[in-house]
Length: 428
Image 1 (cartoon, rainbow, N blue to C red):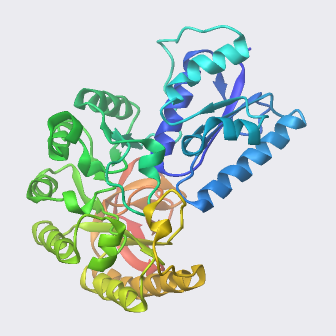
Image 2: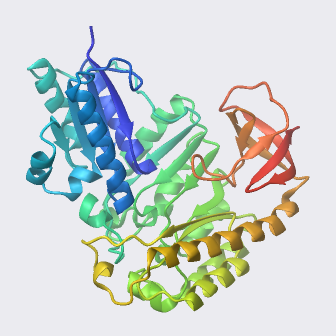
């Protein structure tokens, strides 16, 4: 009988891709993945430690899994990902002696060997005929094109956790994309810490457009670009999105703030004027562009006037999807030592101000989309997405009836109404 394992994946889509690779490794050597709580003997926890809230969630999960191990519900506990990448191994081993194996993000490729040695007491040879098991629906796939980051934003721990930017080769990315397409993917969602940095280490300059042109030759309906760094947006990138039919007219570009002084303190490598310039260019060249962004409130030195500046900015530039987060003081970052801290309560009030502003703006703008018809991917449960909505993170289109098709199939939908952040729709 195959040893059974379950896997819990915390954090972002980048970690989810890592989790899928870990599942693939274990499938190769004779393990069987089952849902959590299915009398499995092994639990793999892929962790996040980007901010304190993520650390708290990770440590709560570790504590619960240790409890399960101590009462005999689990035999082995493996912890991988960003949490063991952020802290020294001996500290974690002293704090959690019941954890059997630790793997940083750069050690996850060793899971196959180390866990087989632990469980089987010998090394197993990979099975070349295994089935790739996805943790997301088959009709879309997260395609991670690089690892690590060189931007060193002053509030961010990712370069310390995941290391310097390292691009995957075009051949590797294309091969991974073809596997996902063969499994039924209609949409490839490009992810990285900074997608626009892709190729800098391979070709001496950022070369995302080169990769996009190669991916666009594949038989895929949508290529969706996430995690665009503003200062690397140029005319070539905009032209590639505009002129390539199967690149979705959707860009996820985390802006974080718009005040030039605060952007400098954040080490975002651009000014407000530059930001306005590229947004104007993108909207002019790609009139139906759907933009997604995020903002941070409560960064040291932020004032109420700067929040007003953000509100005016999102009034001037239409964002289809917008998220907001309060600043988290992380001790390893430069911003943790900055003067003029902002209390969490004030940061939360400012977050509410921005999100309330965005909600009212959407209520004014969304009716302009009504009575228009879009090709959508059905997600099940009378919900679907157009090119304007990314999976997992964005709003949805709620249908007025069951379309009687399977999740992942395409359907044309006419938008008929608005419900909060979501559209209402009717299948044509």
